[in-house]
Length: 86
Image 1 (tube, rainbow, N blue to C red):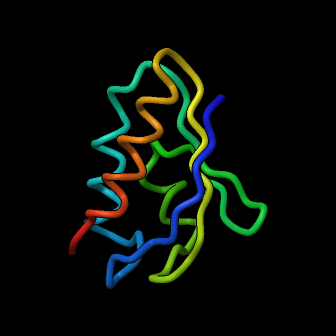
Image 2: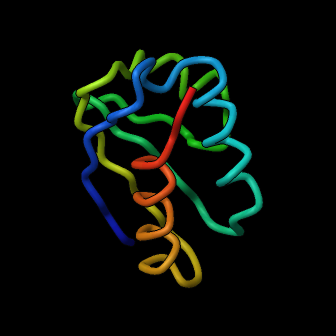
């Protein structure tokens, strides 16, 4: 299991388009990807789960990756989140 903390810098947080982009990015990863915010956990492959967390700009989230090459994918995921735009 690989865990990374990241602060969401995107102006609108993880709502609508940015959330959909994130889901598209992780859906082909063969393992599990979860987002944790304030103790609530969501499957990052589900747009409904991601949006239900209500992640706004400036929110610190934890990304949890389990599966093959999890460390590498976790690093790629952090980079993806850091570069999200509307």
